Picture (cartoon, rainbow, N blue to C red):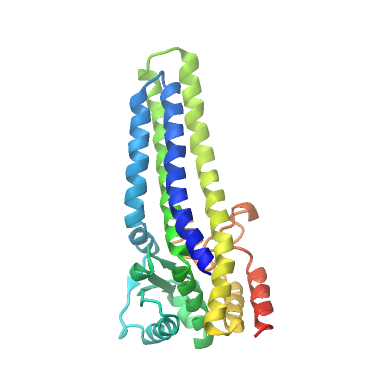
Amino acid sequence: MYSAIARNKRNTWLILIGFVVAIAAVGVLAGWLAGNNWWITAFVLVFAVGYATVQYFAADREALALSGAVEVSQADAPRFHRIVENLCISTGTPLPRLYVVDDPAPNAFATGRTPEQAAITVTTGLLDLLTDRELEGVLAHELAHIRNYDIRVSLVVFGLVVAVGALSDIVMRMAFFGGGRRGGNNQSQLIFLLFGVVAAVISPLVAAVVQASISRQREYLADATGALTTRDPEGLASALEKIGTASQPLQRANTSMAHLWLADPLRPGGMTRLFATHPPLPERIERLQTIGGRF
């Protein structure tokens, strides 16, 4: 587990640096295609650095706002607080802020940059569907994301997915509406327009692949860590079975934060296996049952 935590911390900075380098390269290419208008390159680079910095500190609040989460006190949700407090005591984890989303779809996610600044969110559908034993398994899974620093890497990915969408939109607008005012021949203008279209189409796909590849292994690790915490892998396996049976899309599902949730929050069949942000529930359940046989 400690190697996973160290790897996640390292990956956070690698993702941030890689994002800035990649966007800078796109800016250089865009400036060259626009007739050596290097102000475009400068704009893209400043935007990338500024956006990456802002997202690092603000992405957790954005995720909570996008999901419609509302913070709850112990008086508002005593069962939720009691189970999380017991798990935090047993693992020595700081007590996170607790949020609830009013949505019948059973799901949950954890967010934050560090364990001291973390939050756990569950839907009303999850609280209504699961027994205490099953809910404990799910919350142990979310605490595992916090303890393993998955929340930091996931938030960075969330922020960068949003940034890629914004940048591709900017490039598309520049390609369509800036072409008539730029100097140069029609061929260079056509190349820049094609670049804008390709960037708008390809960038979200690349972001989705990165989002999915980062998320899948972290779900397996959080399942295993949560099972070791509760010493009850069958509890989480039972919860995942119920969630799979009652599977339905969230009312406020957002593709940019799909990888944060316990189970895929999007409409079934809406994404291919290549872009799925979560491993299949049957595979996760099978792994948990295998772990259960060793206790």
